[in-house]
Image (tube, rainbow, N blue to C red; front, top):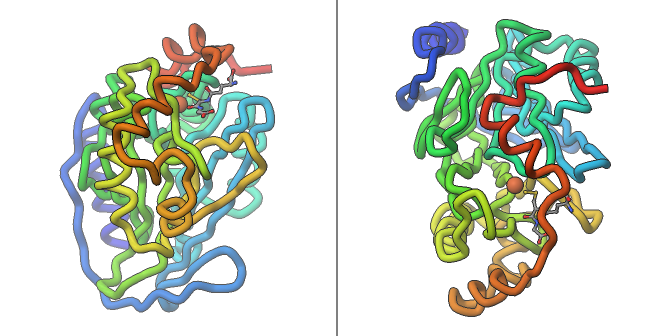
Length: 286
Ligand SMILES: N[C@@H](CCC(=O)N[C@@H](CSS)C(=O)NCC(=O)O)C(=O)O
Ligand SMILES: [Fe+2]
């Protein structure tokens, strides 16, 4: 509890165009994965988790909260402007306190909901990587931890799809091994990966990022991407290390695959990128 409030205070101190320092704490809670899609770290913290989908852009938004903390602090990863009402309604129905609206990167295919969320819930802080070049309240970098109650997301820099892409990996105050979730944005998609042909993308960089920052996580780490176009919802590090048709190849083959994807640009790229560079602030979507 104390840690949460201290962290909020810290973030407020850094709320204007700042980078906050790594924030580390230790406790002895032992994690247990439940049958209900959430995992607990003894009685003192429990991850509430919801995977939400926007059909129009095939985007996943993730809601995470520490449901055992008295305040039920919550965060959203990759919210979409058009699903604002859905997201705020479920947060209200579950009695959560939304603290952070975070992005894995500057999206090219949809407008982030971050700016609208901030206008509806003024205490919410937006979070994005410093390397993204986008406007936000809090800028994160490799190794930073974003705490919500007794739980946190560790930031891993995974550039390549865009220059500022980051992956958020769950953790908690325990020093025991835990089941983990990695929110990979567009770095790793299930049986695929993000394209590398705009926004500072680089197939060489993406290959190195994934192999050094994501495929080094334990095999049972759950992978939750920002998009899916094939009907998948979740994968694991072990699964993608074995079966990803792009990322299992050697680096030269991977670069050749990426150079020959010939994908049309996302329909909304000219609207989405400039809007997302300023936190998606615009009038409420209809
Ligand atoms: N058709 C969609 C855009 C599809 C697309 O380009 N997706 C991106 C992620 S969103 S930046 C991507 O990296 N895809 C990789 C792939 O292999 O499909 C639209 O017009 O919005
Ligand atoms: Fe993207």
